[in-house]
Length: 446
Image 1: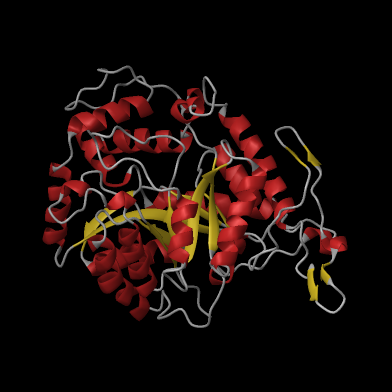
Image 2: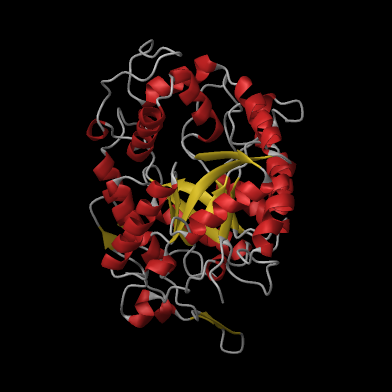
């Protein structure tokens, strides 16, 4: 079968554009409305998307003045969405920095069972002092330390998911034997960051492990992805940069002893779609005109580690900025933003507008045909295995993409017409079910 796109719907309250909540049709309270998310999930499922994705962090994002702030806990929300959908994958973000392996492994196993094999985990290491202080720390752990902890966390989680063999449950009523204790394998792990003794209290799940997703593009992030990730969300501004990232990650995956086809690279794209190019540009302009520059200015200074009042809206970024080596959090996003500003000689005001639409992800305003052309070109030229679709406004942007762009991708043979027989999320991404390491005698994933 010819290679086809993987499409993931990245859902963010009223849309990815920071001013989307100010449009007349937007509901400022949608971020805590289950019915809103059910509607979005069903739209994405109508488009036969592989999966949907919820971002998250253990801190209050932005200031409450800027845009709808706060979010429902994603595993809780996705469990509800599992009962309202049938096919679409359900990917939740959860931090290895501020969770324990046992509790989180149990939650993802539960979601996978409830959804009949549709769970995915976006693994993050959580940058930022704000989150650290919510967990009793004075400062965030160093970048390399966060990734070392994440690696041990994943190793322990996989031991927990494998702590039941698939055929542990006997259910022999006549003999009075429900399960085979010989097929339970407690981790008895003693490591640098974690001590975990007992087996998971949830049976092995339909997928074995949830789909493992990762979003870091720093050196540490790429090393981690090559070892563990099965789908990678990435922010890339140009085709050339995306091709370079794609080739590098596939090579690293092969060097780690894994099949490069078993990691899917999904750049983010924020499509603003109009019936004509001029209409798309007008829609984008309306959104940008609703940005409050002072909000973006404050966030940009925080991201660039600059003192308040350093930046001027109608000037370019200062010549001297902290180097990436001095940045402990969100290294890859820091580099992308600085390079974007330098390459296009953007004023701070224009940079804020660009970031307001997609926070560093590719933003594209055009007709359905132009959006499909861009997606098809990146896919064909070795820059992507699919895309993280990030509508600027929700639900209208997702509806437009499903109704006007997806049919073009199908007509070009790039995307499925329908789901077909029931599949797990792993199967839809073309991935094998991991063998239980206690049965085979080798690690389930290298």
